[in-house]
Image (cartoon, rainbow, N blue to C red):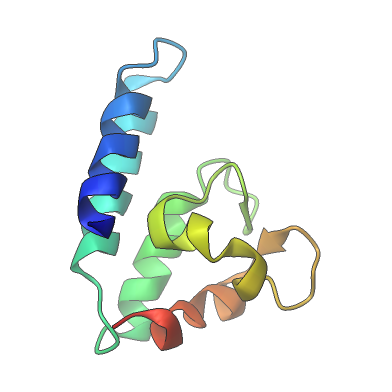
Length: 98
């Protein structure tokens, strides 16, 4: 069900005319990687996801950059409550995945 919801979000976002084609491709790649992740995923996979989600390159993921499980658990992952996720905080996603 989560994979279907994530794909619906990606399709909806890709149909938005305000998104650049590279943004759509990046979001699609992030969604694909996220849907394939499990509790057995590696920190390297989390780092790749972080790079894909950090669309503005500021070394943080804002709530507007988050998708899928990351967006659903954003407040839980945001350990320092600064409204953004750093790589260390995103690594906490591994504990939430089943």
